[in-house]
Length: 203
Image 1 (cartoon, rainbow, N blue to C red):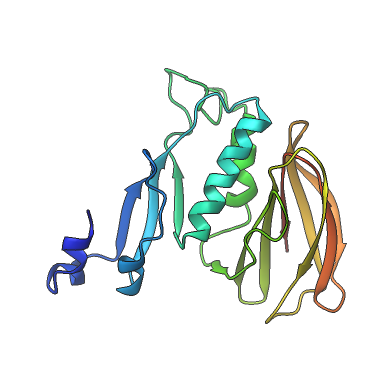
Image 2: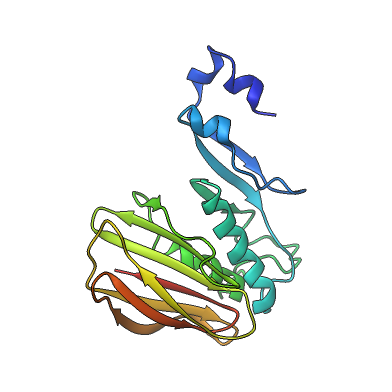
């Protein structure tokens, strides 16, 4: 739907961001917009019944990862709080954070304005999906394990030098819990990713 505007020599110079939703299978790489130097934002989506089920929250984590892997620059959840709750609110009206809020926080807390997505092997092992982001010498890696068993995953960092990374994780019983840190030796480290979990490695 956006191609007529992008392909118009006058119109294309009057916008910088292509925004859209991903309802109805709309998650795709918008190559034409990207080739014209436009940023692509996912500006609305939500999944119901995600407040207490990690299995459902893993679908959120996979969706955000898929959007980033499709070269999108932003992901917006439809609402943080709305009175007619269908299980998609991220918080209560008093500010209590649900599991879906912590799941999104694994990305949002550490992938901050100024960070740029860098290339990564997106699906390095069965059920494992990885996206990475950098800001100068700072690196953030978000790894999700969609499977029902833990996976020992090796990470290799290219084009940069990091000595250690802090770790936070969300799972059925962990809400962005600090897991300490991991040492990076010769630009490589291996970490055990628990089943149905989102793990963020960050400065």
